[in-house]
Length: 141
Image (tube, rainbow, N blue to C red):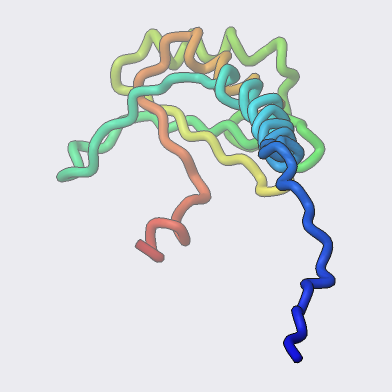
């Protein structure tokens, strides 16, 4: 007696191969969001030529300091000033070739106040500018 065994598994045809585009769309949406977030940051910059580290030259005769408080208030050599008074003070520093300017911003001060102050300094033509408050960053290097 011979028995024939028949497969009970159903025979299915292979479906047409398709590409699942859902992960691709997710990745593209993440890339678009990243571009939207980074483009404004990249376009808002103030180019400044900073000197390379090297031997210190003779110190300037007059060093003026602009301080930015956490509230955004400005002070010139310890005396409070308004933002509209800053260009006139900067003009006197720009006219003196031996004068230098230091800017000290509090760590909690708003960035837009710092950026506006830095843009005003650049437009005044100040070439001798130092940043105060980065001493612990330099010490860490």
